[in-house]
Amino acid sequence: MKLTFSHLIFAVAISIYGTIVAAQPAGTPMQVMVATPEQLAVTQSASKTVGVSQVKGQSAEMLYGDSSRPGLYTVLLRLAPHKRIMPLSHPDSRFVTVLSGTFYIGFGDTYEESKLKALSAGGIYTEPAHVNHFGETRGEPALVAITGYGPSGTLYAKPSDSKNAHK
Image 1 (cartoon, rainbow, N blue to C red):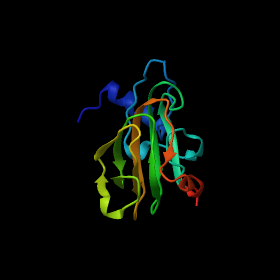
Image 2 (image 1 turned 90 degrees about the horizontal axis):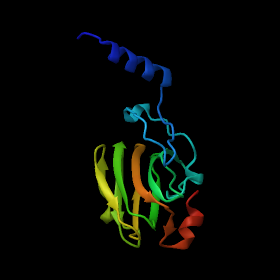
Image 3 (image 1 turned 45 degrees about the vertical axis):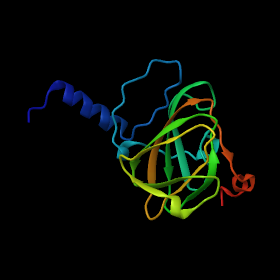
Image 4 (image 1 turned 90 degrees about the vertical axis):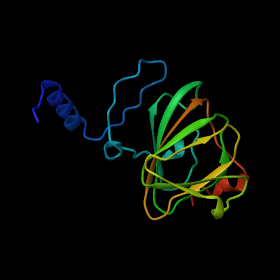
């Protein structure tokens, strides 16, 4: 295979940036980004990211926009193995894509393991506004991309679950 100048530039760009995640503020022109799930650095605690569950062992990176403000946003969410998200909802409708690992998702006001559906990389689901959903990871971490139109937020079906989320 012949290496063209454009391939060389792309390879240099990838090697310079290594892992790729740079938040792009809403209202600015979207920049070109090409990355595999392995190249996405998701290392910040999710505790300050609006619109995601606050489970200990979860990290998040805002990829585009700001979920706390009106407008389009995408956030990358990484969950460590053996993490459970209790039933919760969001004020905005969202579209979720599993990028790596397996994420188990279910819908309802109470956590019911029998309602969980396993979604591996490439799996998708929606989170309609104000619809309670829950999920978990099992023996492996999962990386998901969540896209919505903010402002977002998180409301647990059972308020005490929000206090226990970091345990």
